[in-house]
Image (cartoon, rainbow, N blue to C red; front, side, top):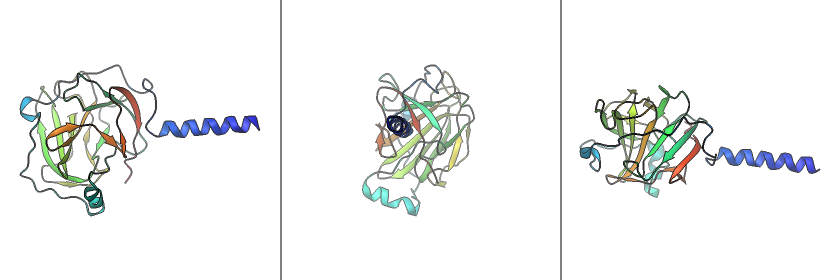
Length: 207
């Protein structure tokens, strides 16, 4: 009987680790660094593109915010790093071993408002998506972009690939959730991201 209880405890612990609470240090590379947005992009948003939300995600907007998911395929585990010296402070840097070229997905449905390339500076190749109610997401340092401005996307749709473009110390995804032009604390599947430090997250971005 004692052995049975131990097995249950281990099983519950494994389930808990699946729920975005894994300790840091098991999948990511060494600490990385990036420059963050250029001054002109630090607080401004492009507003001349009509925002269209997928019909099956409209209820989330009426409830207040999209049900943002991790910007990676379902089941993948990524180390998310946050730090007070980040630019902007509420951004999350995602990394895992050998992640160059890995798929980046839309965290929620909406309309692409920017597909930009700042060369070797700032974000490098990056994408912004508007989700309604003033919410937007940004995906930076990409190695490739698979969408265009004005395109409507669904949550879980591939939009680009992880890279190290712009002023970045190595391959990772710089990710932001924004509200009314300002970066805010990120939430994934209804759970707030960890600030400040590094945690492993498992993606629930399942279509």
